[in-house]
Image (cartoon, rainbow, N blue to C red; front, side):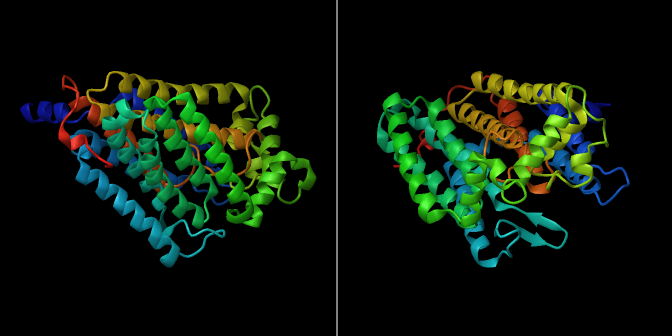
Length: 377
């Protein structure tokens, strides 16, 4: 009995984060299941979910406060940089992008690990610099960290994750309290960078996707096909949906990549407006809980790290749903916990576990104002 009670006390789950995440994962597995009518990624995703839960249990039990250390943060960032750089030389192209390392049946996307690294680094930087964020130099330094990883991802090319990284950096800068004047300057810089990318950086197919977003009906059978089919899937779900397993757009493969990039559209077709409302409510529970944890965080690092996780999830949700509804150009973006794939699912549960551990061990701690918070010159 003594051993059991000790084990119970040493294992800590934040059920308000864990249960919604598992629910979303199971809904995703249910949506990608073909119910014996063809090859399905559902069984493999169920294995990845079990692994992700194990990662959550392990990390949530540990004292993750060591991640606040400068050496740990810079090691994470350096490792992410090296992995992204190695992709350009050693990874085989998949659908035109060098974004994955493949080891037999297992594929690993370094961009997922890089998201953790960037969140940790920005949290570290802002935990000391947020009171001085009025100095534009700090915006430039933090932006340089983010831009380095973003450019490596653009070269792959992976426009979707490049947008996520840019949004993550901008979101964390906004919550740190930068001035409206600096926001305007950032907007001008973004327009200039966008202009350069349009003429020099984007591949022809990426420009075509953006053009088809402005006028998707111009090429329904070509560049506008994916967006058009996604909108049909969402609209055909109507109020109550067609029923689980009866989504014709997805199960008959009119909707491409319905198990990954367009799983929200496939879900909407089968569950309808009511199901979508419930789904977004579950996501809202996770985001609201993360915001609550950030508000009462023991240290500045913990607060910024938790807000970084919130911004990352919110960006993925908004972009994925926006693409499915035809509100954004198609960039090939997953939605947290639901889309097929192992590396992003493990990362998402790992992020929740780190937030859980920091919140648990940070209770009653004073604000961290030690010299170890220093980063960035």
